[in-house]
Image (cartoon, rainbow, N blue to C red):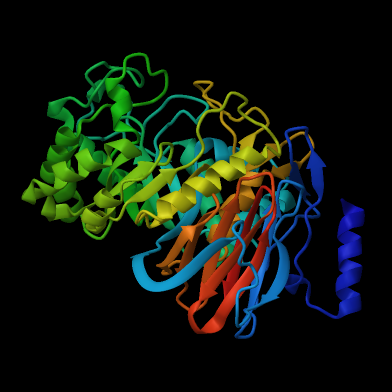
Amino acid sequence: MRRQALLVLLLVLRRGFAAEELQLPCVPRDFGFGSVVCVCNASYCDTLPTPILPDVGEALVYTSDVEGARFLKTQHSFLASRNGTGPDVARFTLESTTFQTVLGWGGAFTDAAAKNILDLSPDAQDRLLSSYFSSSGLEYNIGRVNMGGCDFSWRTYTYNDEEGDVELSSFALQPEDTDYKIPVIKRAEAVGGRALRLFASPWTAPKWMKTNNDFVGYGQLRHDMYQPWAEYFVRFLDEYAAQGINYWGLTAQNQPVDGYVPGIAFNCMGWTAEEQRKWVAENLGPTLLQHGYGDVKLMILDDQRYQLPEWAENQRAHKKQERKRARLTHHSRLPCNNSTFCTSYTHFHPFPASGSAPFAVPVALGKWERLESYAHDIIENMNHWVTGWVDWNLALDMQGGPNWASNFVDAPIIVNKEADEFYKNPMFYAMGHFSKFVKEGATKLGLTSQDQKNLDATAFRNPDGSVAIIILNRAVKSIEAVVEVGDRGFLNLNVGPRSLQTIIFV
């Protein structure tokens, strides 16, 4: 690793470039899961500086593939006519039709993620945070934070576990906040040079507020606790504000259906759409407004996509909800093909809250199928009016935790504390093909095709006028593609086997 860093430095000096302008390459390692991870430590990590846009008539193409390419950059020219005309060529046409505006991209500052980051040496911590938030990394602008304990904590807790304390006199942030999440959030914002769009999600109320007097399992919020629970949210916002961290948004409950499922063995609390609407309209919304948090975005559902129509219709049918307009947030784990729903409910701003789900093998370092799953899901979401995509844990350990409920999963970055190094999974690069090139405020563009040859594709126009097109090929063979772009002409591409490409141009 040190030799690699030295060679890169020598190359920089010979070429006369500033170090920050040079894209540092991946140091690959194969763990036997079909592709490679990129290895980072205290002295070296691959980077992706903000690209300089090419001249008009030219395009930059960034490619990651199963063979080990990671953000490999090439340059292509638009042509006056298409080269590929055969039956095996995928054809796309970029349209001027515009759709939703992008809020951005990010990941979750869970207790587990913060601990894993801080388990590294200070220099390695800096490189990990830079990989996500800096101009030489993925440039995340959104972060999700668990409000109180979640399964990705090492213990069960809330901020007010004193039995019967409806006045919340014992409410207090915990060491997981003050010693872990808050320092990491502040450093992430410093690395990125801007405040993040942060949103918080509760997994459960204190046990004594619930029907089952437990953090887990089949249990809901007691009706006589509706107002104390709303005031709990305000106390959370107040305590974080006192620490210098302000929240852009809240979700009303993480996976509200779980608390109606017997046997759920991690932190949860049940809500129906009607129950949550009533509580938001009569308790949470007015309480937020009363305490000066009227600008905080409130997101409902925060669960599976198939539930979107029911929850949105429930909100729209009750005008009282207008006192505190709610967005829809959902988890991206089921097929999305409901264009009619998304067109009808665009005022709810559908916004996914998490990505990774439990796998048969929780941590599979270098598994390419997980990049394909991420990229396919994001493209499908963005093609159906979704406004952003926020991943789950920013970093986990080699087991996929810590997780007190043993609900281990994979993550884009896996930390090896003993070796003081971390591994960038293919999922990390899946996120980067979007977050690096599709900026906050970008507009979704129409990208039509009568025959796309099983390629997944989506397109955006950034606030600076540049265009980003993302194409995923999950096939085991190359596919020729032609993209027609108005007065620019035709861009002829070879989309390699099992690859993800981002094309940018002006």
